[in-house]
Length: 130
Image 1 (cartoon, rainbow, N blue to C red):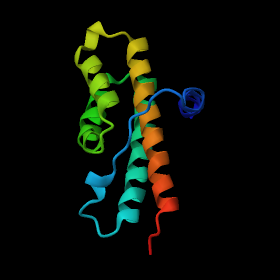
Image 2: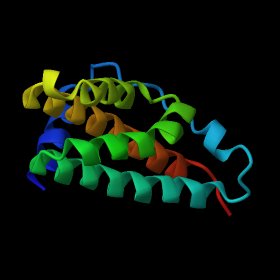
Image 3: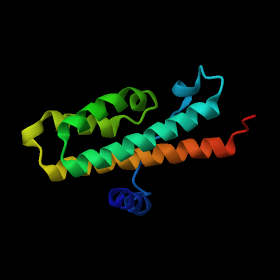
Image 4: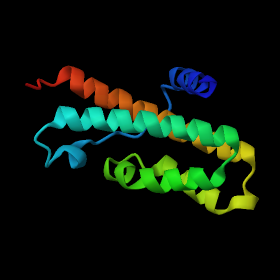
C-alpha cells in the first residue's frame, strides 16, 4: 500500500529519531516456544498495521479507536505504548482533532509497529532456536 511506502520512507529518513526500546521479555517469559510467539507477534502486528492504513484511508475514527484499544495491552506490556496512547487521546477528543493530526499520529504508530516487527525479526534471526 502507498501508506506503507510512506511509512517505510519515514523510518529510513528518521532513524536518528528515538524509537522506543522494545522489551519482548514480558511477552516471552512464560512461553516455551519463543520463536513461535515472536512470529505470531509479527503476523498480528502486520495485520494491525494494514488495518490502521485501511481505517485512516476511509476516515473511520471509530474503527481506529477500537484498533487502538485492541493493541494497547500488548504494546504497553512490551514498553512501546506511547504512540497508541497519544493516538487514543486524539481520537477520544473526536471533533476537536483534525484529520491531519490524526494521520500524523497514525504514522507514528505505524513507525513504532514497523520498528517492533524489525526487532522481533532480528531476535528470531540471531537467537538459537531449536
